[in-house]
Image (cartoon, rainbow, N blue to C red):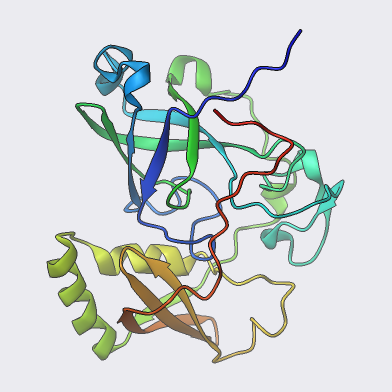
Length: 251
């Protein structure tokens, strides 16, 4: 059978500008918003009919920012704090076929655009498919949590400095969004740092991630992440990588 290219139905417009800062799982940050506009070739006026009656959807995506050239059979999930687990017992994005599966809350459908919340995908992510979440079939009553039951997600307390609080209000007005402080709190409470990176975990080290049109600078001290300031006009510190690996053809 001849190989068939994976077709991209649209590219996600997300509040997250880069991988660092993007939640590691869906629905962890309820206020994280995104929009997906379905390409005209898929006749969204017809193909989206009836979707707005669902509360949640599955997004099948392509990890376009992956740069790994080899696939490792064991990986180190952040919540295992340096311990390893089998690749297929994890949700690592570094997979033989870099395909992602995310559950998102459906905010609404407006024309060809699907508005979403609780997303865990970076801006520009190619979306291969969208499917409705159906509780009758998608909830397994006898499901078990595997190793994740013994490894709670790392968490931090979050504080916002007085200077950052003022900048958040300005950003909300500029971007015409609400709840930006809560959004930053939810993001930082998950502890963005790589537990295997000793330099990154140095107490008091100032780090930053890009969200909307600004960089959020924060520091972690004694289990509390403090939003220090918001910066606009800065340049992303990691080069954006948009070239898909050649082993997979996207159409």
